[in-house]
Amino acid sequence: MTKYVLCVLFACTPRHDVELQFGPDAESLTIGFRCYRDSPPDELMFQRAVALGLVRFAVVIDVITIDGPFPGCRGEDLVKACRDTGNCKVYTDKGRYCVDISVPLGDVPLGDPGATLEWLNNSLRERAPIIADDPPDGPVVVRAIATQETCTEIMSSPSFPLLSIDAALGCAYSCPTRLDDIDVPLVLSLDTLTDHCEQMVRQCAAFPGAP
Amino acid sequence: MSMAIHDVPVRWLVFALFAGCAAKPQHTIPIALLVDGDRASLGALSANAVSGLELHEIELPKPRPAAPDPSNAAIAQARSHYATGDFDACRAVLANVDHVRLLAARERGLVARALVLDTACAWGGLDKSAAHASAAQLASFSLAMPELAVSPDVERVIGQAVATAGKAPRSPLFVRGVVGARLLIDGVEAGCTLPCTIDVTPGDHVIAVEADGYEPTAQRLRAPDAHDVTIKQQPANPDLAARQWRARVGRGQPSTDAIGAALVGKLAKQRRVAYLHGDQRLTGALVVDGKLVATANRPPHEGDALVRELAYDGGILHRPALWEKPWFWIGATAATIVIAGAVVWLVYEPDKHTRVVVP
Figure 1 (tube, each protein chain N blue to C red):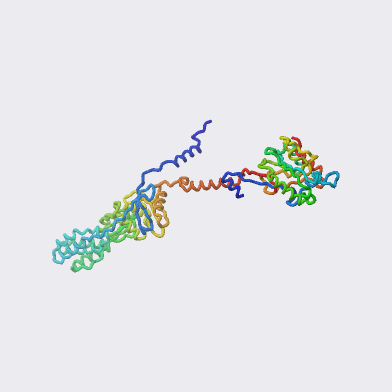
Figure 2: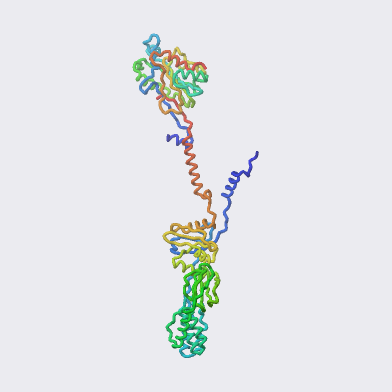
């Protein structure tokens, strides 16, 4: 509050950082990043990122703007809001957040969700700690996708094409929010009741669909 | 339709603006200060201590020492002539004694001595009718017999006159004049104020009236020929007004009631007089044209504020409106800043620079 008062007096613009939280709490990794495949059902989707002793994938984090009334948090609410307004889109005015990660398999604690979360946070913080700088003030949804695509492939098109849903390894998103108004970590999760959630990840990666 | 300057709110606004910016009058209004009590408790009161006023302090005229009454000497001289048997000289000297003035001044003893001597000298000079006349006057004035050595014949004449006066029926005498004036009959308080009716014995009488603000007046009359008398009094001069005012205050009467204010107006010889009394608390009264127009009080050492307050209340100075006072604008500005700050505090939402970051 004090910094806002000082900014009133000196006409400055206060900085406001919103931290992402990839799970329901600070120690848990969202189920969206540890879904099992439909077939074979005992294989994590993330297993597809393992090749030749390396874990290689890209993390893409998008800010998706939503016009119109503030929608609810469930998938159905979001889909309806975007269908009604026809104007949900990935905010790309200042580029798109994409980080390639390639590390030896032994460095990734895939069997331990808490450790995986810490490792993921550290990896992103080392590479690019700022995900979005001064995004729109209106209702937005923040979505994080892990994909087999590389950032080079993703950024090759100036129009930032839709991600390949077949390459998706995990996905989570936030409830619609105004980033200026929140003072707590922004929770990313997947709207699912089971860890066999490959289809949910694919749908999450495909959101909001073609413009 | 064009904006009409005759619209009432606009007219008032224009008036207020011009009134607020109008130059104040440069001339000052003279006011006399009559200070009483503890002068030091008033604080500094220079001529221009109050903006818009020109103050000048006046002093009450000092009481003059009483001059020796020539009647005493005349009576002593007449007594000397009586003792040596020079009765004509005795009566000639006594003829200069003003009975009316002496009785108005309550000098009944002197008048009694003069009349007894006049009776004795007339009797000694064989002018018996004059002796009876003087004795009759003595009796009419109801004067007590003084301790004077006169012949038994004279004492008998006087005794007869007193007895005759005592038996005569009294008649009413109606006296008019300045309402409220005190009435004296033959040098004695009549116990009433004008207009007043008193019963008097037949014969000569001296009636005198006294009223604050007026010259005292007396006149001789004969009852019952005179039964309805009007006595006119001249307004008091400043010296007399000052003496009367001092005497009133000395008697414990209010210094600035209606009569006191009139006296203050006369003694100061000014249209506007501020009477200030210094004590544990300063009190003041403003007299304009002999009338009390304002009273006020203040803590000690605020004499200038007391005079200013009197001038405001008395209509001599225009009391500044609320918006003409500097502290009003200081307060209004402070309040505006506070309110504006509160509004900004409540409604302003600074444009935040939000970043989404990795925890």
